[in-house]
Length: 197
Image (cartoon, rainbow, N blue to C red):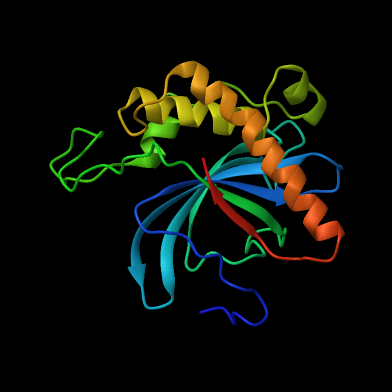
């Protein structure tokens, strides 16, 4: 368990969906990811992080520079474990409805919902390139990945009462939250913003 005095815990609700914005070196831009929370453990809410991000330790310069990745986080801290980025904001998507205990999207006999399968089969991005510039020119980035993942959740009945246009409109709202969070950090208030849409 992390020392929460060194890395304060971000209070996430169980069985929820969040968009996470992490600080990067480009002003006005953020790294986007999803947190899907499950139950509660003694150390806090267990979350699975889903994101489009850099592939570390590529075996060849021809290998893709980015890919879909996922991992469990328990608890979610203000500083990410994987790359030590500050979490500017987490935005709860209130239209999310967690899958029921008997929900399964894999067709197997085990009753569980496999978010990795949902985001991988088929992949949200069919291809990733060995060059950042090519990925960006083709619209392949973490923000677009999150928006496409939200649409996939909506199409699978896990985001209700929102239409495709509403999912597209989330981008501007989340970006506004990120800008306000950045202003707070710049004024000396270094704390993750937790809000909802």
